[in-house]
Image (tube, rainbow, N blue to C red; front, side, top):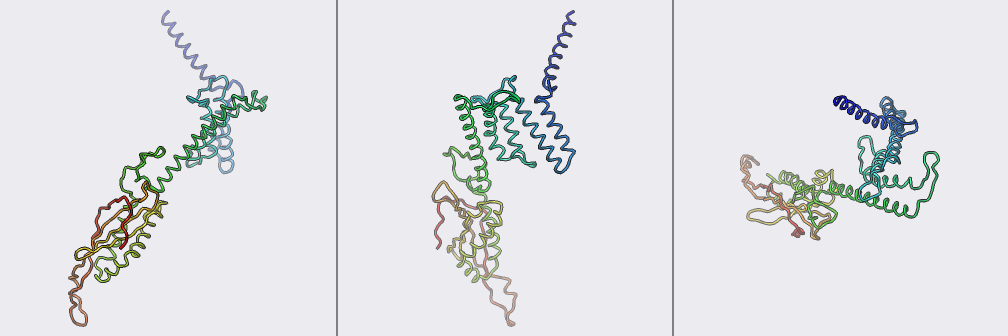
Length: 345
């Protein structure tokens, strides 16, 4: 007898589960939310088998069926709606708002666009507020003006969701700034209530280093092995020569960054024993947490050496005297200096 009771008990549980599943998936009548969901699935199936304008039109209808079906289910009076903690915003409205936002602003290659996420909270709030302007059900619904106590809730809900949308937009704007101007992250933002420095732990702006790393080999190629007199003349006009090369290197190396116009390249030439010291400066002209800004330096040493190969050349049947050529070597290390660059001499 106990075995029969256990068997019938298990059968009862299975029957209960079956009835619940049946209630969810089998529409009680043709005019129900399940019908709209099934129509959306059928539309997407037909859309996958179609092409051209017909494909887009059927997919469009499928989205409408899905949105209205989901909204109907999540706002069903027979189901106790779950609210976002601390608000009067139903979770169902969030789901419907997300579908509407994706349908209106998403793209085939990227469903979650910044605009989709930014407008999601505001659309969800508007969806929550719409039923307050109607009374009745089905085809018998008519417009009404919400009660005074309901108006305050609607205004607070929409206003709060718009603030959340603004915060999302602020995040995407900040992220775009950091992507286009990565050197901004070098500054210290610990005192900021809006920006958290999480993307980079570097102490030296990589783009400033990149400019000097690309510039130094070009200058070495121009000066190495050249007659010393020509090199000295080049150093006299170093401001123009290095500036032109710096502009070319910056435009090429930072082609994918908007901050390329905020870097300026300048030289500093000083006399040292038997030669010259050439400092290559990449100067940041963009926003900085300090008024004096910062710059980066890569130092090069330019020295005169004897051209031993010149002794093998003849001029008018006579051997040339040994001539002096330039030897240049740039440091691999790049220094970061906070403050204004030294004045040009």
